Length: 199
Length: 139
Image 1: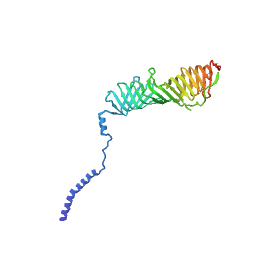
Image 2: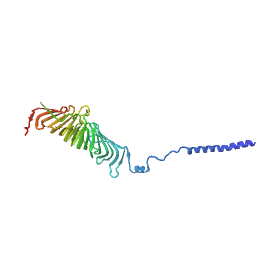
Image 3: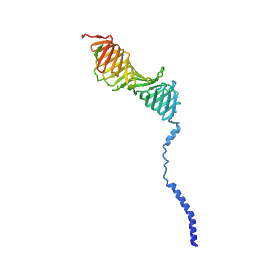
Image 4: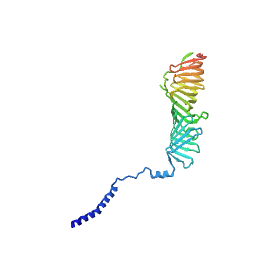
């Protein structure tokens, strides 16, 4: 008789102890699991505050047309409005393409630019690179350009390579000939061209 | 037809062409380039100066085929000098065609004509059209 009582006691204890052991085992499972680092999300606190305070657009895209029908498209890595001048936007890594009515294409690339829509002026600064579809590549440090017409002027000396050879000039002016509308690249303030004849 | 030696030496062959000017305007549509304002074309010992030079490209490639200088041109090579109203420097055929009251001065003697073709490879010049020679008597 006694053995039966003992057996049933043991079973009834086991009915309690075994689930508890299982629970214990289960709970340690979460503790042992490998820690997932949530710590360093790449946006620092200061950057968050900075972004919140200034409205900043990343990779904005602007398209428009000039009075004489040239299509202008402009993009940048980031652009933010200038707090003290309404209507003025400062952009980094600007890229502009102008498709002209006569089929030629001009692309402008600069490290930084301030675009002033009301003043109809865009100032490009820092490694400004201008390429034209008929093979001219021009490098300068600064370029001031109108937004509504094909009219731009370099703010300093310019180096160019193109069909006519390698060229240094004191200033570059880009204008559209009012009669034919054809775009003229005018290198002024002294021009020196070196051309290697094909041997 | 008068043949004269012209120019210092022949190694100008494919020396780089250097053009300096006040300004250069390039028309993007048809690609013509015009130098204006005391333009000087230099190649080796050759100097061609003019107020205006038009660059003409070859049809196929982007190579320059001719330089057209107008508006009163002076050409100097070594100690020979020539003046004319216009000069057409053809880089392919290596010739310079000068036209319009050409005056060639070589040392004391001077020759005038309507037209002169300078061949840069063999340093000769042919003058045609009312050629007149003025010989300075040595004083």
